[in-house]
Structure formats: structure tokens, C-alpha cells
Length: 313
Image 1: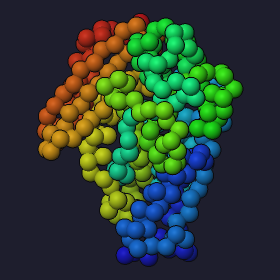
Image 2: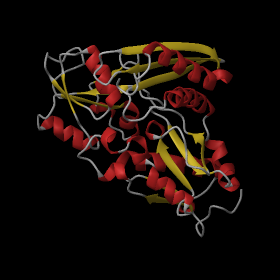
Image 3: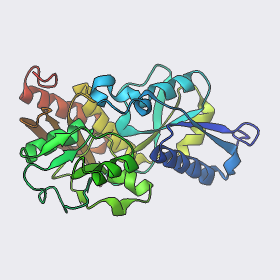
């Protein structure tokens, strides 16, 4: 194995500073240690505070969308301050800045949403008019479509902050990703997982991507052994669907790709923010055609929805 990284020149891993982001950075480091027989001090985790972490009192859709959680980290990589960046793929814009690439994906966790409530067992058990908190436009639109009687309020913050809001009675229920709870060892918080047939998850939910500089061949060699190919195939199909829709935090979009042998099944959904209109469809084909399937599926839903749908028109 190459002498890079080593304790005198550690590989610098850029990440946000939340408990979940740090858990994902540690998982990446541990997989690299195991793959290459390297000690822990051959790596250094560098915490970078992003705009999305600093502004917690406004909806993401009002302050700039998905890039809020990635821009400063990517700037640090382009500036040579870090060597790789670890991201939740559901937070990633479909286009990376010039010079950066994501071609390493860790094995995907549970893709489902988690229903969380101190007093109610499931979405269907919520009483009429109950207040539900969520910062996700997708979850809110899906919930509004399924339960238009509920009151939906903005709900941002980390796991502990959201749980405290429930205890304070600001809402009676909220949602988190099962993947995040699993990585934090907090799955017992979930009252029940929400099956994808009830709420189709966000694009790439549960997937971790590792970003690098495109011309950094040494880092590419380091990352190659920990790339999980099934996760990569699924995420690329879902992100092709998102890219055709030009989706952002202002647009409720959901998708899930699943593998069955050498076949890929992709389901996609677009919604109006108020849940009043939903379009969904699916594709099945060879895993090699996943990206084309994602693009084609998005084209069908755009045609069905008509002009202006994604702009709220």
C-alpha cells in the first residue's frame, strides 16, 4: 500500500459537525482503515460548518436549497484544505462543482422514513387535526395528500432538538430517516418505520457518498475498494430521475431504485407542495440501463403533470 496517507500526512476527511455527519465520517474512515490496513492516525476528520447548519430558523426552501449543506465543504476541497468529503447523498445537488466527483458509495442503510411520536403509533393513528412537524417538503406533501386533515408545521434541527419539540408539545409527531437513526444507534426512537408503499423516500435516502477531486488519482485508488456497487447503481438511477426534473428543496420529489438479480426497479413520484396533486410511475429493466430509466421516468411524469407543475403553477 502507498505511504499516503500516514501519520505524517493524514488523509483529511471533510464533514459537517452534526452527530450523524460525524458518524458517517467515522464509518468512512473505519472502512478505509480495514480495506488498507491503516491506523486511525493516518486520517484526520475536519469539521466544516455549513450555511444549512448555521441558519435553523427558516425553511431550507427559503434560503437556497440543497447546496446549503455542501457548498463550504466543496470549497474547502477545491482549496486543498481537505482530501475527501463525506455526504448524505439525499442532501447533494445533482451537479458537482467543476473538478469534483462522487464515485464512492458506502453500503446503503434502511431507506424508510421513521414515524416518531410520544403518544401515537402510526400515521393512521393520528387524530383529526393533529399537528405534525417536518422540515421536508416531500414528507409534508405526501402527508397532506394522505391525511389532508392534519396541521403541518416547520420542524428543523437535529434529532435531539426535534424530540424536545415533541416533548414541548409543538407537534405530536414528526419524521426522521431510519438510516440516520440506525447510524446513531437510536432506532428505538422510531414508533414505526413507514413503508415505501406509504411514503416513497427521498432520492438517495440512506446512502453515503464520498466526494473527491477528479484529478486526485491517489485518493481514487484509496476509495475504490470501499465502493458498494449495488448502492452506486441504485443511487445513480434515482439521481438521474432527479436531474431530469431539476429537483431542489423547493420541489417535493421521491424515488426509490431496488435491485432484483440483474434487474432494476425504479419508482418515482412528484407532488404539489400542498399534496393536492400527485403523479407517480415506475420502470423496470437491466441494471445497466438505470440512468436511462431514471431520465425516461422523469420525462413521463413531466408530461403527465404538464407545464408549470414543478414551479407550483
